[in-house]
Length: 440
Image (tube, rainbow, N blue to C red; front, side):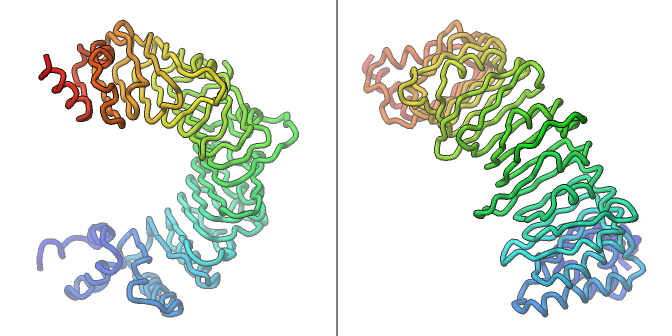
């Protein structure tokens, strides 16, 4: 017998867990010793069962056969991870959930990315006490009733719902009392998917949340504790918030806030009460944005695909920053063009395709270490006294022959960067420099 075959079934099970399903099953023909080794695996991805199978009934029966063999094996006791393909047969889905419940599965994935949404029964989850990670895609979450034995997901820490419809968010999230990470992406359709902030009050340990394509309605003020007492990071994509300031005030310890595709009129402010240190605002089709007043705790600011209506507020926001990213940012027509970067703490500055800002003048950044500029280099001006600690500079001009042979303009840009340890410039600059040196 070879040395690998002499290993314990649990060790071999961990090894075959790294294989795709098809290769995992092939190990059963190696020898009599390996006939049942695959049943000791701790992770199964049953999406591999659909290879060369175009009949849904055959597809389901094939997975049922695998599960029957696992249930009959004494080596299959606890399974760490199962990935079930999405099907439009609720009875089969219910059988598979019961199997996961009987085998103490910790991570369960149901993925239905094509076809019409199917209502998924949660009655089988009642005894699934070991489930810590659950991911569901393309199903309808039914209205849940309170279970006499306690919440349906007493150990669930991470929940991801993609293209789902939740009938009653309040009672659904009440079944997840210890959840820490939540991702919800509602279907991108014409319906208005409501998710009240109060529906998550039953999840006091929630630290990370990501919401997409929904509406957070206005609710009457509550005298109780904040809705998100432990929330540290939030991402909102195409989320319509009726009262943005009230929602932000309900997150007393939030440190990272990302807003993608904000609707027109999305207004909020960050004052000394807030602890946000990283703010990202990413638009779509250049929406008009009035930059809010920012708290002194803010250290990282990223703006992308936006049209700023109040440039003075943008300049004022630089004061306490350490990292600044401006990507395809424009100034509202009629507003003053050009900005001055004056930030005593700033260490990283990145400006990309933002000629709509006008001239970006780096005037007072004594701690700046890295400078990145991609786009029309004619809209960048660096003062020598502003970058005494600059170590790396990356300049990539998208305009051919930007200065038209005017050497002094090139000199004005490059002379303040003569002390930089690592300087990268694209070939248009190099061609111009060689041409000027040849003339000299």
